[in-house]
Length: 237
Image 1 (cartoon, rainbow, N blue to C red):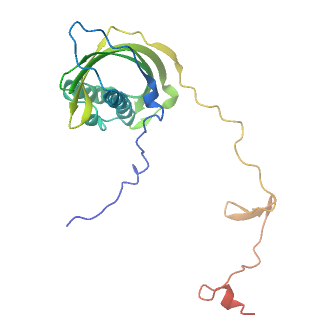
Image 2 (cartoon, rainbow, N blue to C red; image 1 turned 180 degrees about the vertical axis):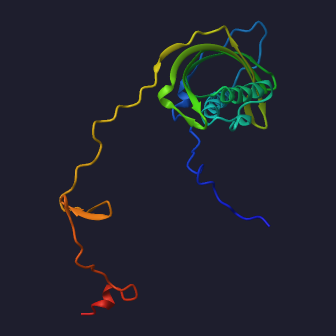
Image 3 (cartoon, rainbow, N blue to C red; image 1 turned 60 degrees about the horizontal axis):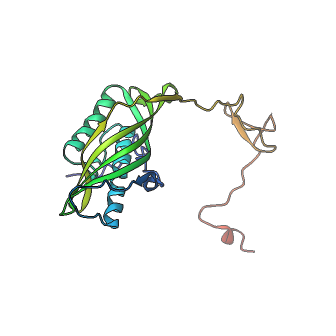
């Protein structure tokens, strides 16, 4: 017999990060590359679907890096690309790091669209990434030791239409970009005293004793009403 144990209290509040609300605004389509052989023209709706799936793939990779495990990657990747990003996530965690990654901008040039509408090829000339590297201390992140890097890359990408969804099947980063160190993560400095000021007349407990206005307070009695007789029945008049 199976029993319902519910969520693990230790992980119940470990919420999965969400993709940015402005995600689809981060991609610009350049004019399609001229072809020596006439090929099918891409429909506007198809272009929108590819935009959405491509950017969600980047966001899902970033989410997986942040939570420290492959998460939902099969929705947006397939074949060699799926194997590659999965390996990247697992190897990053195994090496003692977690990464918060954000893709800020893309400039895409279409250079292939299959006649049956199931395969596209394009080059993303301006992939702008910001990555925050945080070392792992056991299972706990130490954000104070992190480093923030910014870099620009170029990718050749092939996407395929499977089960009605566009997925990245293969991509290849072109060249070796040198990331710029934006700087270490700086936590906000705490003020000298964060204890709230006492409120006049408000009772507090210190070492098991009630205090009011910095003086011990002796309780003389307790006002109450019986649980079985609400106010309307306790004082009928």
